Image (cartoon, rainbow, N blue to C red):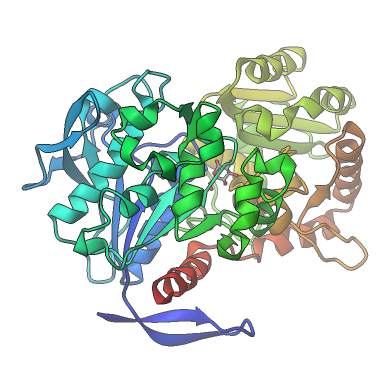
Length: 510
Ligand code: GLC
């Protein structure tokens, strides 16, 4: 099958070409809306949807977590794909495949994309998606093998298997060992996307025996094996045809010692096959002019709705109105990665001076939850905090805040700064990973730039950027230019997916 696709020529110009439809598998531990703890879930769902709409033949695999059955999704078993037995050294597990429609994935011809779940209750019906149970290594090996078995049994020959994060890191190894003789996979190439180097899936070396892979134990990283450990991410990095990560800057950063987190030598050795592609925004979900979750839609041409969203947001949190106080928003997983250690030294003074209001949505480590709660307790009329996950509230904050704060220590890509740009909520970010790639520093004289950017992970640097933002805020007409610059940026998946297609085509051609 051939389809007409947008392509980007070497000189950067865009054009149309007839390209072959590809058979692409996406496999991950999360896919929204079924299973989500972070950006990975959004990325997998939106990329799959976009590729499907462009006419490619896409299959998405994730585990059938027990919680999905309680969440009211219409998940049905696939005929002919049940009772699949997977043997490990001391244990055999049986799995099947079930399917459900990915919401909002209809093509023009009405065909929706079905997501496939590896159904193995004994491994995936647990509290939470991720566990520290003694058989955690078997859970993710089962996602990889279950997916490969499902493809083999349905006689489907993928061009590309796009793996995501350590949970899927064994796929390239299985293709070179257990499945090396399977004809369907003879032309299959693998891409391993790294969404976060700080999660590597490291286990004791004896899992190699437990997986039933003793015969090929020389394929694991020998030094690390000798030191008694094995890592699924590292194994994926060794054997995937290509490696990807979610921004150009992070692709460079992970080849260095600090953010390579022990795997930088391997990444440097494969730098010719390591590509950084910034994630996209799902514009069906994140567009202020047609967002059904926010109280007053608005656009760059008419920002009246944004002012009303701001008022509604403050009311929702019981925060006192003051048109001169800048409303600062935070939406985040509350983890050490996100850089909140810097805040206690800068925020209280600004709150006391009445120069800012603060709205926080997030959940995670207790120390950060406690910090934001205490900030609210100290400034109840200026700080609103919601600890947890709340999709509608996330939209309200993106729509109603003036400034979005993201001081991350490191950030492979980050999505909220891109949502913020679309909603005229000016991002203030640290110059790292995807934040560096997507936010350009504001230059008041030239009227260019989309946000505020600081470099060093220090209190002084953050305070300096906040000062700069507060100064710019004084001049509302140039602030409007700053907002509009951001709103004009296009990080849609329609655009970003072209880079993946380009890569898939290069992979298939090599
Ligand atoms: C991880 C990263 C984040 C990225 C997301 C999706 O959560 O920490 O920066 O946006 O994956 O790729």
